[in-house]
Image (cartoon, rainbow, N blue to C red; front, side, top):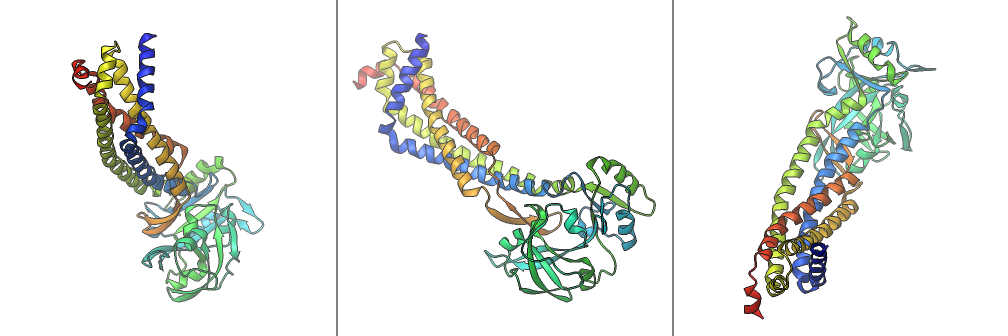
Length: 395
């Protein structure tokens, strides 16, 4: 009990005197907050990108590509193959037929709103069932394109990030002049980054004949996936691979999100070293300014460990304040912020929102506390080793 009371007494004494070292203490708090802010900001890119890609599709939605294709750009399916796939057992149907959309995927040049630089934006040709295959599809402005006409609808993410895509705008792509007639949303999925048109109109515009690149379809239930996959992949008339859409899109972002995480860890580590040195400087200054007090406490019978812990408590408190400040500012500044980046698997832009999640904020706080712990250890040891005679010389 005496040891605990000594720790409380010395720690409380240190904290009450923080106002005498306000400048250096604030510098440590701000430094740690800056590190946490940058770390969370960078990592929120990867979290947001993964969330966007993983949310594309549900357990009932499936994508079918040519076997061995790493993306829609390098896939290819004949018209007959798409009909065989659509007629497969387990595909959900409505009054118009199977919910299976044979689709094309091309890249068009569109300038970015912020910089004006040209970006690769996906133009997707879809079949009539495409809207029902995506259960979360909705028109936000304007209307759907009319089949057989040179009309496109724009995802809300693409509209926010790229210029000249407003309603009524005309664009020349391929051999057609296209008119924007609507803005759509698929609930924040990667398809919000795309432009959609009639696949039958897109085929001659890019001289694709009667071919497609993928089939997006909806199954009767998630449990029918394995049977459908086995039947379609085993059909000798086909040479295809079947994947759940959510899993396929999530895999598409794996390389990019991993790179972002590695980059964030490296940047956070380098900045963290700077913050640790800042904390070291602050705590060494604090120990130096309190040389007489520390030595006097030791002369009065206070042990070395309470002195060590009191210095660590101060360092941890400053770091914790910085961690909370950095996490809060990161949430306010970055959460929900729209951005676009290049998806290396499809060589096209994908729009997404930064996601500052509770686990990210908690991780930033823990990192701040670790910086405070490392930055306070050496000054604490120095404080504990101060000779009692120092107090007599400086009184």
